[in-house]
Image 1: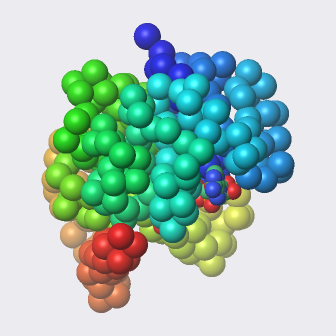
Image 2: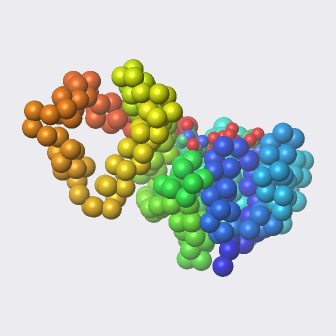
Image 3: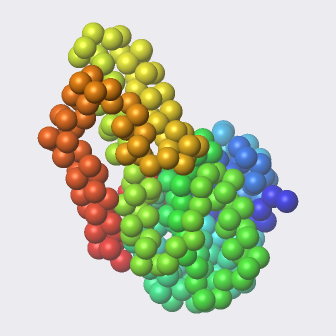
Length: 269
Ligand SMILES: NC(=O)C1=CN([C@@H]2O[C@H](COP(=O)(O)OP(=O)(O)OC[C@H]3O[C@@H](n4cnc5c(N)ncnc54)[C@H](O)[C@@H]3O)[C@@H](O)[C@H]2O)C=CC1
Ligand SMILES: O=C(O)[C@@H]1CCC=N1
């Protein structure tokens, strides 16, 4: 059973990734989708990508919300306040799902006037069915609502229900995480180019290596440290590289990156 009618307020990068993944996996039918998007350019992207969906300018947000069973809030955190307090919109009887980093359930519930609200932290690999999302729920969210949220998020990857205080950590690990891994892929490929590989070959090797390493962790269930040890021959090439990475505190850098993102998320409330 596909999801019921959904209106997304905001149709930018994350909405494109999340909804795009839901449509690809057939959890959502484009005909049941409305996107409210202020820019004509943004609307025409949706119109050309998904001709069966409906796009509306911001003046029609009240009607677009009224027509939906689920409302997705996919605007930047600082726009959430004005969007949920817009007198043209009634969120009564709607499941409201926010993907805004940092914005707490308390603020969301106060704005929409009820507690049937879910806070989600997705990530952009949702577009290719390899997303990772965390979510937490407001007091009046029903089991059927949780089922719909899981249908939505499992259709685009892995999902974990967490407590609200853990949402900042989810943001630090998986919400922002793709950017850290894109940096690593770029660095691996640059290293290959520095050592004489053609750019295209270096990028393909780096990409496949990250994909393969991630699948090894997921599919073997072995600790990443064990998998690392298995690559390191005594006195070999890998341990020489690992020593350099440790001297450059790569694991500490990752931990600091997660904390920096989580701290920024805490500031956004
Ligand atoms: N980009 C990412 O990887 C992730 C983003 N998020 C969250 O998703 C939300 C959206 O972020 P992005 O998609 O990256 O930003 P974006 O800037 O690409 O998209 C936001 C969209 O909202 C539109 N917009 C602005 N004011 C509006 C209004 N009043 N009504 C309707 N639409 C309006 C903008 O034109 C834009 O298309 C943010 O709250 C962010 O924290 C969460 C997880 C990951
Ligand atoms: O950078 C941001 O604020 C958003 C939230 C998580 C990923 N992107």
